[in-house]
Image 1 (cartoon, helix red, strand yellow):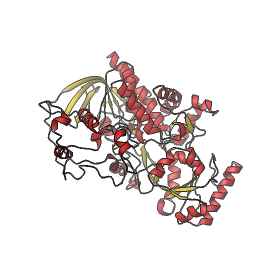
Image 2: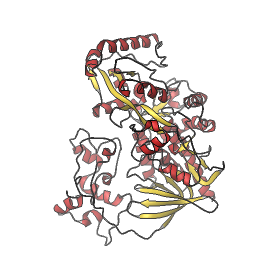
Image 3: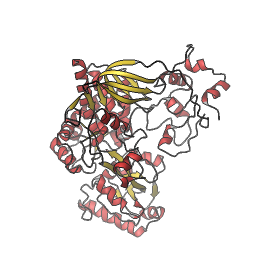
Image 4: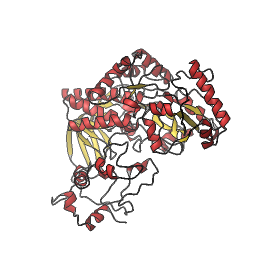
Length: 558
Ligand code: MEZ
């Protein structure tokens, strides 16, 4: 194989064309300079994507604007980032090259300074960084992955918030108290009540904040375990995560916040009194360096994509697929624990009932929220589709093949834009009639037809006597009819670092660790034993804002 640098040379494109003419070639960890060279010749991701003919187009993906070097490497093997989760046939120039990493001369270990360092560039981290910056702090945001967005980028269904202007405009009656009660009940009352109060009280303000910085979350749907329509998402029912990640990225870029990808924090540094004073970073090209900071915000996410860690805490989940991005390995939890933080609820790992069988693609709960039903291989309904995730997953695992089908019709398809993506990914089976769909699924047609008929009558009667589904938004009567085979998969880790309502990390002695804040999935306590769908994005924005504001306040007072 030939590495990309060699392929360029064959076309008379020399080192200086990509790296400039400086005597000593240096590449920054985020590879910004080299990416500008790629774009200068080839055009940006959108321009290249527009030319591509592939059905699954890596230049036009849900990940948004990536660096070219996320997939293309000049001196070692290139590989589409998509293949870390998907199994498409996705050849890439330089993909067969031998791995001979270029040895760049690393400079002597340096020490930088910042007011606030944020670890992890998912929604919590980006929100904290933007908030701290807006409060006047000099911020450095560090991300170990080659792209920003974290797991938030994959969030599908929406963001829960109570008593918002969008609910009011739609005549939906909700309250902070009801969101609090639903969240506590969903978490089996093991949540930290003070944190749940903060989540519910600030949720509407967080929707306003996101809207004020350019997000569209005006559509409101319903998720399992919620008493009312409370899940905010983009108009038409597009996925929330990719949209929010793009808005946060743009806001960070517009403010010229120092965001560094390929930059892994390997240690949180403390002084003799146990006060957090900075971080040690391992940069992809620059090697090891330290950043001295007045406050550190840890927002490094959970560990659903770390099968060993999942199996350690929950042996029964061994071998299960995950819906998470590859960086969700839980290193942040270890960093926080080594810096003295107490871990709680580590065994509380959430299984999402509907991951497309044989894949890592989450089929959003919003499909059920908008009316889809769950049918087993024998053609029968078997559960209230809007029960909490733990109960729905348990019910699916008891069915033949430990899987089931999500069944919906054209009306449901049209009600939720995200569903188009599942067609694009060829996950959907269909039939012009229920009989045809049953044939495609090799399922007894009479049983399937009878199950759908019984369900439709329940919708007409506004009462589901069989399974007590609390919301029956649509009967399934509009051809075509569709099915996606789903299996439960590891989706979210409720446990993590103990924090207080100011997002300060709490040590084993029960006292806050000075200078150390945490927000998002790396923390434990907000969700108790079971998180409600839509509460994660809500948590990331609310607690990210609190962490950013408090870190900046501390930094400015120091
Ligand atoms: O919060 C979630 O995990 C969520 C809404 C997932 C989904 O099914 O879309």
